[in-house]
Length: 152
Ligand code: CA2
Image (cartoon, rainbow, N blue to C red):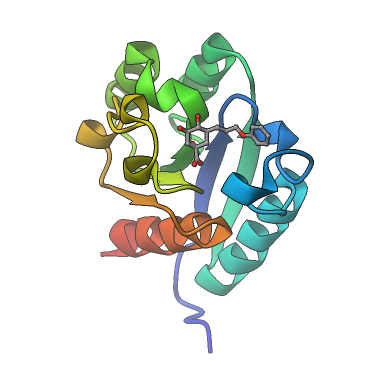
């Protein structure tokens, strides 16, 4: 039974570059779920947690930075799979640090079992935590962790 006294939370879900291709290519690494299916799963999980999710996908670093800035005053937390920008983007890290919104980093694949260049994340040091390697469950677990953190 959901606790009816809980304040609904608003969570920005950010998907970085190429994640719009999910379900169409490379199912061996990233699974067969499409991005729309992942967003539906998160919406359903959000209902259970009394959190509304607002998914945004972009292939453009600046759009992701702008979206993070606009989250201030609108959302209480950020769930992010920054895709390849995880390993390259100081700008995304600075944006997340700049808005000071609790952020959970997720990855479909286990980035530590892959090429060395994927082992470093610019986001991890300023995130509450990181979940990597559980496919779509990484997102679901990440949302649960973020909501629990915000409610504590
Ligand atoms: O495992 C993850 O979730 C990643 O963030 C996915 C990124 C990758 O650069 C990170 O190292 C780990 C890549 C997303 C690209 O997704 C595609 C999906 C289908 C076909 C091609 C790319």
